[in-house]
Image 1 (cartoon, rainbow, N blue to C red):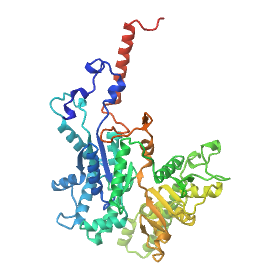
Image 2: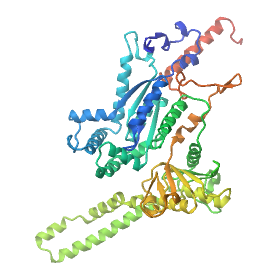
Image 3: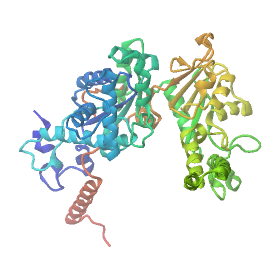
Image 4: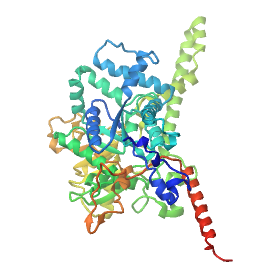
Length: 555
């Protein structure tokens, strides 16, 4: 029987029927949502389809009705209806089909950056509405059945933000990852010409338009990361089942060494007051012991970094009178210098040409706006070249270097053969120190486009199974592995690994049946103001009953 038909599950006002003897906490508990909204984000060729299929299978086993929301189908409809335009014809090769869908998504995001998330929400609402029958007088009385909505796939951070704002703790974003070689093989098997794979990969990753695909930024918001490139197919099922179990509070699942190391790195980064970004790092020895942590912040004389314990002596940028980011300050000065040089050179050229120019040519030369043109060129140099990504003028030491230096400063362990965890992919400066320190492996979470680590140190590092092309004659086993993190994201670490209150009963561990279990982190069907009103009404009734029985305190 559908839950929709069970009127007694709706929230009742205090004093009504079966709620007479229930405390507000009991009534609220009955209003826990049984729904689950899962979205996927990942680079093209990462195999999201197979991941989604495995999720569907395992969620069905866990007692969920599974509903699929396919954003690509909506984009196809928009193209067919002529709501958006694409530069590529529909009868071209398969690579062009992907480009058409990308163009359609970008065109819609140009109207509104989170419009595809709104479409997903509309689809979920429509599916739920079909469950409501005539016996339900008010939609707020309806308790949705145990349903999982799978959204395939998100490409922009604003889409994630809206879905999380609407669904709260019902929503989880899974980042799906795979090595570039594995992704290329999948695309080739899917009929994509080999010579177009690189084009698709780069186009999918990031686009210059603000409302274009911003996959890297969307991935940073993931709650779980799953690598879909394991040789053993069982490894994928294990990771997905583990995530589902954690969401439902299954007891006895502990963090992996990698999850712990990344969480420590993340927590260390929260101590940073750097104006550019908060980044943390940790170093773990082969026994799984964290022997050093680091953060990006300003170093101080005597060793270490400035922090709140330094009080009035704290000389971090944010604490200074002007609170300037020195990296931005000096880059702006470089831009001004470039602008001045261009202006002087252009003025000189125009003046030289003007000497021997005819009257008509002089009229043309007068139209050249030297100052405006100099400004345009200078700012284009900043925005369209690596000048804007310079990190050389920062006062902060980077988190990875802080962690390495702290071992030299305080001792406590060796870096040789250790594993380093960093929230952000290391810059080329940190990469060279990581290599020189003898660190064996690096796990990172978010990409860092300013880094030239691969280009400059491809002889010494492999990134997700691929090296940068330098030093091809060097055996790969001698390189430092840079791997994207897999597992529970630090943002969900405490939620997923904090044990439930009822860990044992009668001396035995309590076994959670995921098929019947509520989600560990609840989301309720009603507004907190409604619950507030129920509590106030209930308290008033309790006080009334006490006074009616003559039990009120005597004055």
